Image 1 (cartoon, rainbow, N blue to C red):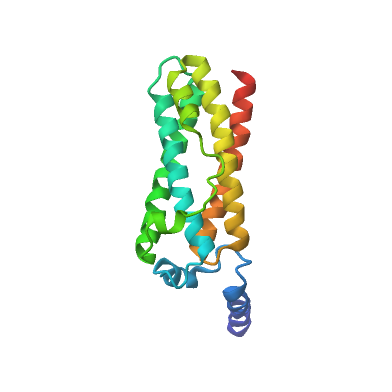
Image 2: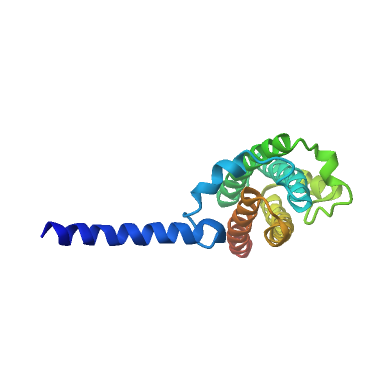
Length: 197
């Protein structure tokens, strides 16, 4: 009887060990690649490709502008509370990502200016766009914020997809995927809000 229990217990362990071994280099099984994390968190410029550096140095000011847009909206009265809740959510998500990306640049020994030359900041608002949001009130501000943030998010998603396709640092690619997932969902929410304001 004990022999049967031991054999039954050994089989799942063998399967787990086999799966863990298979996933070590493939990255195809989410949650099974924890062994690589300590190496990538101590990443250096040698492990960061040009694509990784460009993505991070582009995404920091992109996120900073989203926070500025959200702060502008949150300073206004008469704005639909669903839109202000979304603005708070965007701020709460993007500031920690900025901090993470600045940490990577520091680890890589790369400055913002080094990575940003010749870069296309897709979806960034112009100065006149920002002034229009600043001048708008109430429902007009809510609608303008949503219109601008949809475009802003789409630019971030496009850049993140480029990083997923061309990046080499696992942590940076993971952040890019998170941006695609979260901001695609937020665009859907914003479009729904636009239709109900």
